[in-house]
Length: 158
Image 1 (cartoon, rainbow, N blue to C red):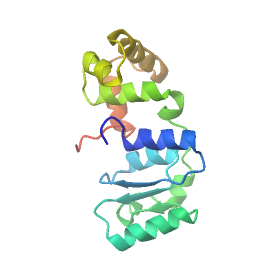
Image 2 (image 1 turned 135 degrees about the horizontal axis):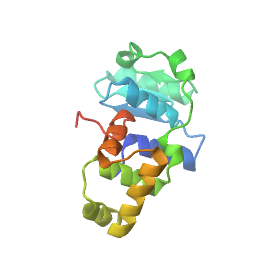
Image 3 (image 1 turned 90 degrees about the horizontal axis):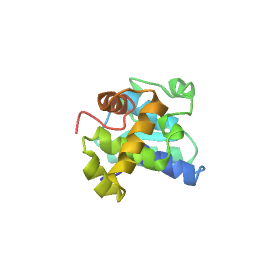
Image 4 (image 1 turned 45 degrees about the vertical axis):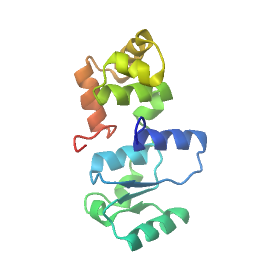
């Protein structure tokens, strides 16, 4: 999704309509990304390579209020593991704009490009970068990028 990743989209949807049930359809079969999505409110997780009947089952499960994990990811983590995940994350500490700036920084865009994409000034981007580092207790752009990878905001697989 250009300009918005699944993690940020989930966070924004849950913030605006908290009772929404979200099933993530992704190509990322990694526990850290799954945990990040659960923290921001996703209720299901299925891989794009899954069979159609599994997708239908996942949709029905989430619709009925159950948590659904793709069979491939359930080998790494169980639903019981997920119950212990605290529903707090980077997304709850950041504004929507800060989250957008963080994603664009992590994707490697320079300040001028971020300013153009978000239709804000370069100075505002710089202020957001500074605030992000303070909020997240990080000291450099490299640490922002590492943090973004660990939180599943961006992936090295892309």
